[in-house]
Image 1: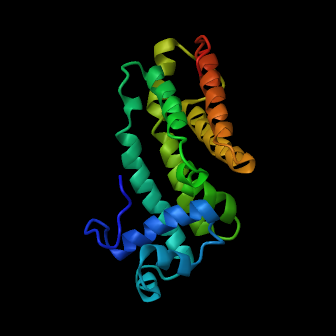
Image 2 (image 1 turned 30 degrees about the vertical axis):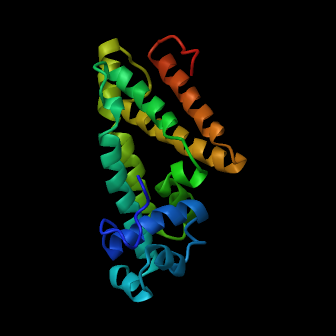
Image 3 (image 1 turned 180 degrees about the vertical axis):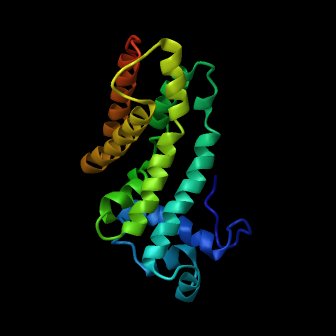
Length: 211
């Protein structure tokens, strides 16, 4: 989809453009290094417009986390991993989908709320809380399929659907950190391959050799 321009009537209002700018710039530069000037320039708005919509940069950070949650929720709700009839197949399809969308530059596939949470967990509790709601909220969308898969296969253990759902996010976010540290997206893909193997082991499935 082509990037909207200032001549495009589909660009959206100033607040939305600022949130979109925050999504892109913070993933590339980090929250602390992102300035109000950066955001205004990319969104093509004035500082007056910025402070009309957001009382501070921190308020923008909270808004960006909430915007990320809203937009990514719609994206994942429409994703094809929901299609298989078997709940375990849906869980594994989720892992495969997360691997498949690791494309482009690091800032294009890494997670905004994961990036901000790592950076501001001490300095900005409000932003950190908004990021946590996003990450844990997304993890919760996997719980029903995991629970159904456990029930269908008679799986019992000292773990729960909730803990496995959270672990998927730990692997994904950790994979993003490794990809950044090594400047190599394959490090994140590798982590998803190991997550697939781990889940298969929990459910006594044979390992895939084409992962």
